[in-house]
Amino acid sequence: MTGNHAASLVTTSWDDGHPLDLRIADLLARYGLTGTFYIPRNVGWPTMTAGEICQLGSRFEVGAHTLDHTALNRAADGEVLRQLSGSRAWIEDVTGKPCRVFCFPAGKYRRAQLPLVRGAGYLSARTIEFLSTDLPRRVEGLALIPTTVQAYPHSPVAYARNALKRWSLVNLFRTGALLSRRDWQKLAGKLLERTLRHGGVFHLWGHSWEIEQEHQWDRLEKLLATIAANKDKVTSMTNSELGSYAL
Ligand SMILES: [Zn+2]
Image (cartoon, rainbow, N blue to C red):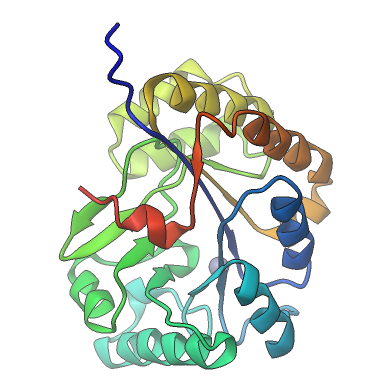
């Protein structure tokens, strides 16, 4: 072993702007961690008020998630541009801060649309590729940010399907190695350990309403406590800050 240890980075992201995101924010604050909240303007369920989003934005990063939670892959260019530019302007208006980070609703996009995302003023975009501990990669001038684990009890089949869909053999290998681990918190623990040992990124993401529905608050808190216990070995950052590491 050499003393040349790669950095271990931790980021978190939370999608869709449900009022329970405020509970996530309190948990992150309690453990000295940060993250990015991706909020659409209109979506078919309750979201935080503009006042709450503004307050959240004073403590955490708020990123765009289209105006209407629109899956970009099936939308025409004009509509894609409207959703991208409109949501950036809306987030900036509500938070009073620049917004340079975007998250694809349902993780859907076509590669040909990436220049539109960059053209709308974004520097980074979060995907739903998971089981990754890699740094973001630069594509079409945009930092594409993968994720490591979702705070949700997925079946092993869902993990395998995600890896296969993206032809990610490395991720599939990790899935195979961990296939029996239905417990996302244990899977997260393993992948966090790998990041601490070998460097790389641990990116936890989720939906607060799912955590509520699946009764995962205790598990989430335990994981955040484990990360906090390793604070001297990891650097906690927002998705945008991570994006600036893009290779
Ligand atoms: Zn979403």
